[in-house]
Image (cartoon, rainbow, N blue to C red; front, side, top):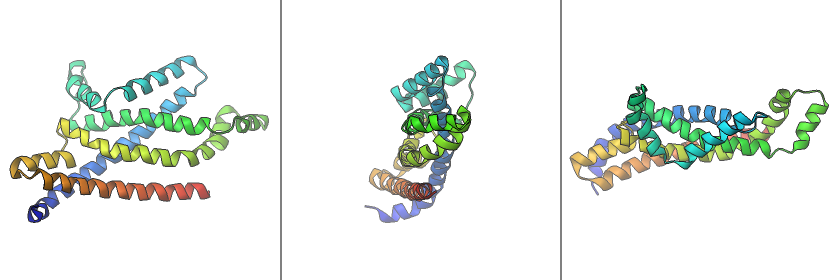
Length: 215
C-alpha cells in the first residue's frame, strides 16, 4: 500500500470532504422540509392531499435515487429545468430523502396515543394547537433516532452525485485512480473520510437525542 501517495493527495480529498459535508447539510435541510410537508399531507383531513403525499412517497421510495438524479440533471433541460451538477444533486437527493423522512415523521406522530388529541380538544385547543403544543413535542422524542438513521443513509447516498460530476469524495477518488492507478489507496482514503463524517454525525444525533429525552 502506498501510504506516501495517500498523504500527498490527502489535502485534495479533504477539500472534497467539505463539499460532501455541504451537500449533506443542504440535502438534509431540504429532506426535512419535504418530509414535514409530506407527513402533513399524509395526515391531512383532505383526501386529495393524502393521495398526493402517498404518491410522493411511493414514487421516490420506489425508484432508484440515481435514476432520479439522471432524470433531473440530464432530462431537466428538455422541460426547461437548467441546473448545475451541485444544484441537481442537492435537489434530487433532498426530495428522495424527504420521502423516507415523511414516513419517519408520520410514524412518530401517529404513535402518540389518540387520547392525547382528544384531551387537548376537550381543553378547548384547536387541532393545530393540539398538534403544536401536545403531539409534536412528544413525537419529537421518537423522531430523533430514526431521522439520524435517515441522515446517515443520506450522507452515504451523496456518493451517487459523482455520477453527474459533482467533485465530492467519490468523484475525487475516481479522478485520482485515473492518474495514479491505485484504486485501493484512493477508495480507502475516501472511505476513511466518509467514516469520520458519519461518526461525527452519529455523535451529534446521540447528543440531540439525550437533550430531547431530558426536556
